[in-house]
Image (tube, rainbow, N blue to C red; front, side):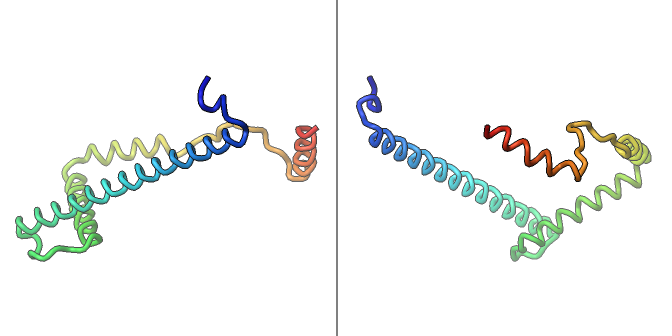
Length: 132
């Protein structure tokens, strides 16, 4: 027989309450640890990007703000994308084919639709039937 078998109702409630609090504390600590890990990785990547750009003489030696780094990366992506579009006609053709396939979608039949006039009757009857 375990510990909870020898306790009364109040004891069982106390043990379960303490156990749930301990579990939530552990989960909170794990969440904080994960958040700190992600923040440190993001900070590392931003410093690395600053360092790469400054050593390539694309930027001044002083560090940039995060939005500036993001805008620079977006601009680099845009340049690469436009260059690819200019060189590769097959990419545009394939892109249009994919977009044409997804132009028209048919509605999935999930539930039957209810007329608004009838909906109040259905909504009011169903909870009463379930409660009975």
